[in-house]
Image (cartoon, rainbow, N blue to C red; front, side, top):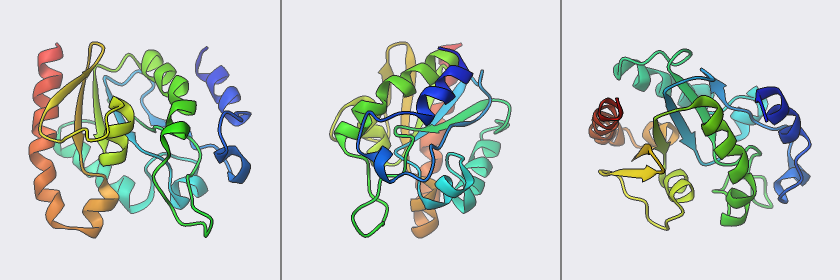
Length: 185
């Protein structure tokens, strides 16, 4: 399945209940051959409206983080989410995707990873790290492996915008990711 086929399949997906309330599928953004993949848990309302993963103020902060890592967001990095439809509760508020929703979207994420050929993944937030690694508590501060791909967890930019002190805590994670990426060659 190439990128166009993936887009078509995602637009018609009914693998989980998120399809029932979606206003649109949120595709990834950035370099489709990026050596880096950034993975959030799921799109929020702004992402759904923009039809773009990690958008708005959080997207601006993410792009600035990438620039601090000497990465060009549109050239070196592909940004996506574990699930492609916005998870929300009965009141319409955002929530983390369920394990079943993550499992339903997993083949799409795996296809994105195969198509990009990314060597390093940076997960944003606890839910993204846990969902990607299939572990209840995927911790920051270590390099995990998803096959041959290095995986490092950090804070989600939305969380850093709410808790400003987390920005400083994220820098060591970014340095760890850069070192892991350099070791991947």
